[in-house]
Length: 541
Image 1 (spheres, helix red, strand yellow):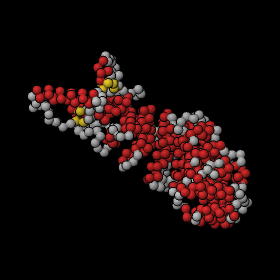
Image 2 (image 1 turned 180 degrees about the vertical axis):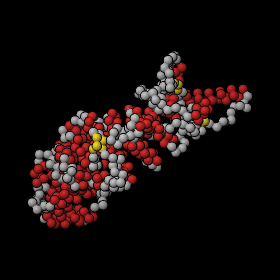
Image 3 (image 1 turned 135 degrees about the horizontal axis):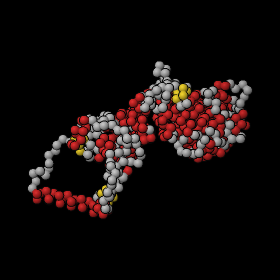
Image 4 (image 1 turned 135 degrees about the vertical axis):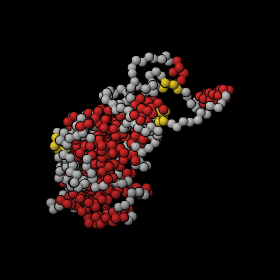
């Protein structure tokens, strides 16, 4: 249908005719996501016309049709000026029952008929929330107006009714809160301090995941025979996790204390133990839980392993390693995904395992036993093979700097930040980037203090150790000596030729010869030759 025709008919149409014309527009454009730029002004006028209808007293079916039309139009960020106003956002907020701003109550009461059924009202609320999600996502102006009319206040008020809301109402309420908190970082502090959003979202998550407490920070173990978590519950839980992630992304001065963060950690541990209807959705839910765990104080991570009622492993001080094993399994899946984005998909779980290992001895010991078991076969380069260690060592030379650094730091922490131990598992070549960044090319340890316990080397490793190439980290097959049959004159000629090549590259600034200072940092070669040697009385292990 031609937009000029639609606009002309809407000017004189009554409620039923308006609904009829808009339904035809919806049928023709329900799957349209790319719009004609030449009709931009017409679509903007249609937005204004639809808002005018929604601002009048019309029946729920007409409201629904208008909102569906507006949802289609809101896919185009260039025509949202009429909606991204105080009046427009108040109308949508009122229809979504968010009580936005002081004028929201009047808009909310408009078009509420005594005969309106609960089902009709729910459909209107859901459509209004969908429109708000699109508008807020696509319009910075609407984001500002949503702050001005205190839309977040209405959202947080709705969170208090989470136990009774319908799935779609809950889903799009949580999604809208996620969008506002993602797109407006300045609102996060207000949400935490004034509207207690972290506490409310935690309660939503606790209810949605059906958490049953058996201890201060211990949820009951999920029944292995129970059905998978329903898809609708999982959808709402993931939206709540995403919103919580935004609100805990930085210290914005909320009301939360150590107790509350530990409560969140316990709920997240429970979520890691749950399965959904598909493997893909389970992995997605676990990914959001891992992202949120990264935002919590690292001191709270002991909640993942301290579950007295369920019990644990004696070898790890009675700690329960089920959640840690889930994280290791998740890491392994992400490393095996072909063509995946390692930076987004893998680095969060690596960072979580790194910090957990750095600050919690039992977690480090358990992960090291899984990832870096005692070496036996050292005839193969550490980056070649299918073990978790092999895959992580390969990532130490990944093209993405973030991935490379995160994988190297993880292995370094598992080795208790000992350069000698790290080189044993990775070889100097793979570890060089980390050692340069840390200023540890000369060996030594990182700054973190670790316990004295350590695994002992296997007999196979001890016997092969003298023959291991420290650069490659494995025992190499004997290679023929290329200069063995050369005369002294030939050797001197080749040596001088090599010196000349290096000198030429250096003068042309293609390469820059570097050396290692006594403190383990890199510097231009001429500087390191001038540095006096330092005596160090410390022992390196």
